[in-house]
Length: 468
Ligand code: GAP
Image (cartoon, rainbow, N blue to C red; front, side):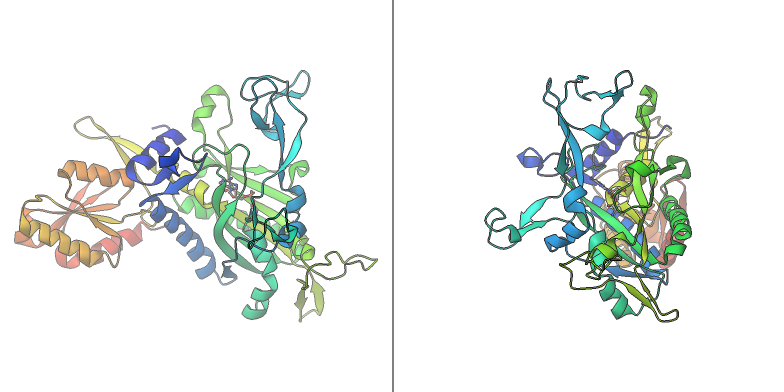
């Protein structure tokens, strides 16, 4: 079957409890979404996979959880106060507010055209800073500018300002990385496409500190490793391509950026549009951030580059007696976009022998919100129900298990297929005689009889085998 479009995933998400529109009972809040009972599990499983892979399985990465609201000076010296903005224009004909850098340009005169009505009658662009402003304490920012603060637009800065804390307390030597997962906020001008672009989202960011000479090779190897990790989550390699960001479009801190693009919009192909958009980016941030946040004198004239910082974030190498600012390779991946790509790649349809089309969400077992569903074949038979409930309670400390008796067996299987549960365990009349149950595989619909005594070991083995 052809790749599903985002609308198919929106519909499944709402129907089954993955993602709901936020503030819905009050009419919603443009492009805000809440993660439901299954969505929170899938998102947590993605984050756990990333954290295990980097922080637990490698030897060179520490974790961190820094504050969302930091001193405003963090955003002054990171460059975000001055440069973290989009160029905005208004259409004088239809009043739409638009991002100039996202508009089509008429090749005959080089003028941008309104994406809403096609007019070229647009206002001059003006910069709109994307950081959400707030105030700290009882003062208002108008009365007391010192009260002004921002919600972080990236988690990365929390890592840079803690570089020395982690270095000193962990006794690390270069190269090493610091990983962080957390919410980030951007007052996006044109949010949309479900959870693809929202104003509140979650990032998994790694800042990998190294010597300048090692940065180019580390850039390439981390990019390969990240793509492999994403493929391990079940995303097909065919749905990725790498976009080398041209020099003129690089962020102020970057010497090189590659965006890993995913085929989020397959339906656009038919109309000649762009199927691809960014799932993650990797940047060589050089020594920009550590230097910017350092009090140390810089340059031949010895002028301080930062009169406000109390720290020098340089690194001392005792083996060479050198002091320098490490370079940073930063792979940054969105939880929400990974979630969407995982759902899109896992979505399949299959026709059963009655000719009915069934949705099967072929999530990797590691990511599946529920690993096992225990289903009684006859919900009025007390012995069957009590055995099914007993099995559910035995399994659930080891693997997330649910019990469901709210429909006929065909309906119960279909429901579990649609939410990606790898195995259903059915307790039937025979189970009371032979102390065995039927295990049904989500992807093949094949069934196997397994003894109750070996059920947990059997399921653990099957789940492990298919784990990424
Ligand atoms: N620290 C670098 C940084 O923040 P970015 O390319 O702006 O780089 C990294 O963001 C990732 O965060 C993106 O690749 C995307 O997955 C996610 N992301 C960024 N803005 C987003 C938004 N408005 N909604 C959802 N995800 C977003």
